[in-house]
Length: 247
View 1 (cartoon, rainbow, N blue to C red):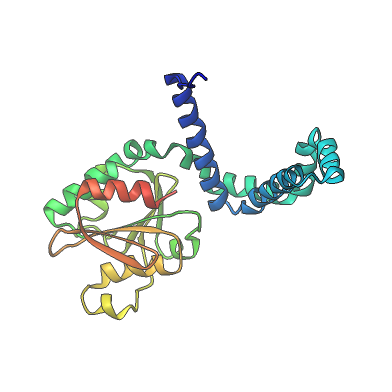
View 2 (cartoon, rainbow, N blue to C red; view 1 turned 90 degrees about the vertical axis):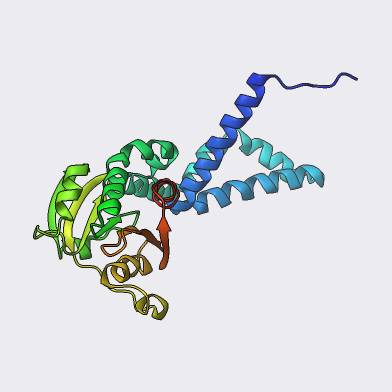
């Protein structure tokens, strides 16, 4: 009996398919499309169970439906499919399939944070995810500008009127500045950190936003997500956090 040895092209093929399936599952999870995934898995389980247990009538029905399963699936889950694509279009979740592109997209942001950390320029930057921050944005000034090192350094220069508050990034653009954020009441953080850090944590306690904080006193870089604060990050660690924690 000959042993099947996979070719390099077979391995590449398998890895690509596995990666795509993984990204699709993550995408469905974030966009609220698990109902579709569960429905598909349920149909497959019923089909295989019927085959294993020799349930002839069930197998016959499923074999008849097999040729039309795509149409039936769309009809049964049309509302979920519509909602899925609507949310994808709204939150631009298709970009999560190309997460590696974020490094170049956020390079100006990382460069600006590195400079502000070195110069001890206090900063509070919020990256919006799927939940829109419109209620908070209204408290600030809309600028809707491309992310650039010079602009971020100007915004957080303590001699400008815009440095107070947070800058909010939406769809890779600086949407608003001088935004007022809610302060965290977590006792652990209240005792150790100032207003900038508490605001950075506070916005993540009720939303899925991701915040970057640069300390004016020490220049240390911190991030917050889901109400948790992570301090003393390097630029490389910050870059990885952005890729992991944002859409």
